[in-house]
Amino acid sequence: MKIAIAGTGYVGLSLATLLSVKNEVVALDIVKEKVDMINSRISPIRDEYIEKYFKEKKLNLRATLDYKDAFEGADFVIISTPTNYDPEKNFFDTSSVEDIIEKVISMKNKNITMVVKSTIPVGYVESVKEKYVIDNIFFSPEFLREGKALYDNLYPSRIIVGDKSEKGQAFAKLLIDSAEKENVDVLYMNTTEAEAVKLFANTYLALRVAYFNELDTYSITKGLNTKDIIDGVCLDPRIGKDYNNPSFGYGGYCLPKDTKQLLANYRDVPQNLIEAIVTANKTRKDFITDEIIKRSPEIVGIYRLTMKAGSDNFRSSAIQDIIRNLRANNVKVIIYEPALKDESYDGFEVVKDLNAFKEKSSLIIANRVESILEDVKEKVYTRDLFSRD
Image (cartoon, rainbow, N blue to C red; front, side, top):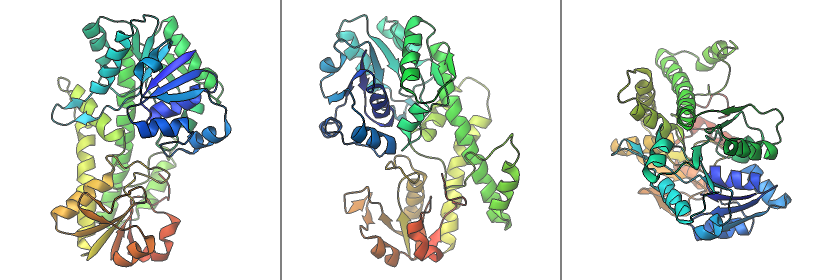
């Protein structure tokens, strides 16, 4: 098959890499630098397995800036463009998805099936079917971790396809045939239910993060040992040990925007819990800010803007809200972030040399600690109790 993939972020590039082992794949992007890197087999994102496959596998993969080149003769067009949450409209910005849909329609090839992998509001695909008078489109959610996107495609927890026709089955087969895991659970459902699965799954994960963060807030306030409490709670197999490591709050590509979008979808439905999850995240970041200010630091050093170890993404990371809170309280801040090329970030000094950063900082804030901070651990403030994500 020929498969076109629009968008080369974590979702798009991991799928492009996965499927190009056994199929012809053309990746479409609007950034020339990313296109050139992919064609040179240099991953534009940090992902161990993508980097490994680029070096070791013979991939039938190329990237292009030309949508006609990408879509011509394609059996599937997988849409994985970004859909950021728009706080003014209280909805996802789906303009990039619709741009691709319109380009596919302009090709006048009714044999192309569009599969939306971008996260979208519940009911979105049905609305675009009506708007564009088309039926060759469905939604299939992704469940990927930043930095481990290809691994999670190779060993998927499940495959969900929002289409019960032969096209849906053919798409599922593409993913199954490319996976390393055997006996993958596959669910076929209507596309709107598939959209709901994505938002409810991520909101539950956000709930887990918020829950253990609030447990930690309680323990700090009452002078209790958070780790002992979490260990005792999580030995119950019904609760388990996933997503139980305290942090400064949930963040990243998915959880902040998906929780807000699900809450927006509840606008005419009774609820208390979904709104509480969104609110709890802000409360946690305010609490962490207060804990930092209590220490009266002369200079606060921010160790990494990234959400977690092994990632180069810091979009919507919780630490950025902490920084903004500190600025509002006139606290001096410096940043150590190797992924940044500039000398400043959002008006704050970026210190390139780690040793200089350690020396200048009177208190070092780390959402996730690493061994590289061991020599200044007396300066480090973190809520990372298990040294993992």
